[in-house]
Length: 159
Length: 159
Length: 83
Length: 83
Image (cartoon, rainbow over all chains, first blue to last red; front, side):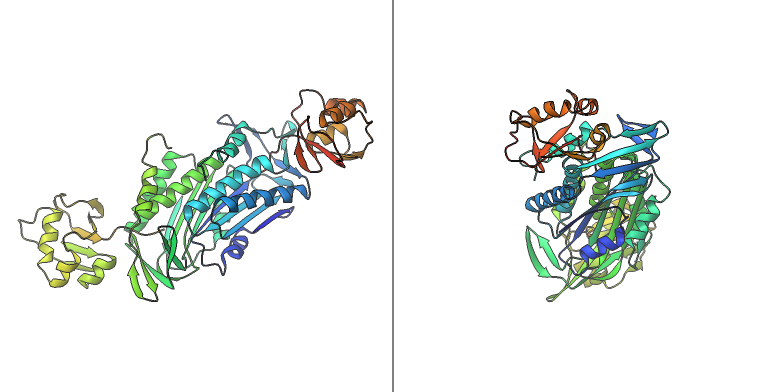
């Protein structure tokens, strides 16, 4: 029911309470919190140290993209509550980047829709990550695994 | 790294912050919050109204069972943080029942392990639900779907 | 030995636990169930044949075939419904 | 029309956006890219052939074949890496 793009941190507990308070139809709430990891992980091993990253986005268009993704999830699953909060700007290692929360009467629907939202927002919302490493700045390249993860949800019969 | 069985409510934001603070290896935190739903859902439609439920458990053995399930998840996936908090006693519609949180460098591992923990705790931890409905009290019967969901994780190659 | 009952088994039997001394011919969990049924009509109803309940011996899952051995505690309970 | 650049395209071109008036023979997104390369060495480098970047016309995803039509804004950006 809501998407937000903001520079400031979010309060996970308060966000989830707002989502479920007064809505006793929700039996299961599936949540994903993405954080800035201090190591880049690719091909199964931990690579360079990451001190911070800067998330650039496309103001206006980003919110539209997130709302489209959210609407698609609500078409596919019976959901009572959905929330996407994505930060932009400079974030140091350990900081929260994104919150995705999905409430449904059924835990399976909540889990699936949450996974779908995370996979799709990685490939369909206009965000770009610039990492700060001891060797200097580096734009994060798109990850084939992310495209594959997002494409899972294109398969007929998956949802 | 922790399992708890308690009568009192838990603070989701504080629990998750404790799990991730100071651990910048975690890139993704997958979380499930189970709530008391005001309607019983079976066979795809909403049935009787539920006013409250009482969760009975087996003190001591329950904690053991949860710790065994948690250890199994940590054998199967590369996890940096795990938490299971399950309430017992009387809970009214809308109240939180259970919190399962899993932190991993990889979001796929976090999602899978979280789903595994939720499925297994439903079928392998000694909890019993007594529902209060307008027609009186009723013990919740085990759900074939829960057994099937738990059995998914027995398949070789699944994890 | 100690017998523990949970959920609706506890309600039907009327106690959460009791200490019993089964005779020597009670060798398995199944034997124990049959013998416990003779203690009272409430026991007979709670542990009725065809009832959907599980058992544990000294906190480990057991079936009706499991020998009692030196077990100090048996527990009977409905299928779990937590989460 | 307005041209917007994001992430490393913006850094390479040196501006986030610019207003341009392509000649009439620039009919598609691909034509526009070829024409923009002629504006400066920085443009040529940012929009170099073989570069992995996407495009949008008036905020909708476009390919190099998409006709410019009446579009008022074109955007160029690397693959998304959010989440």
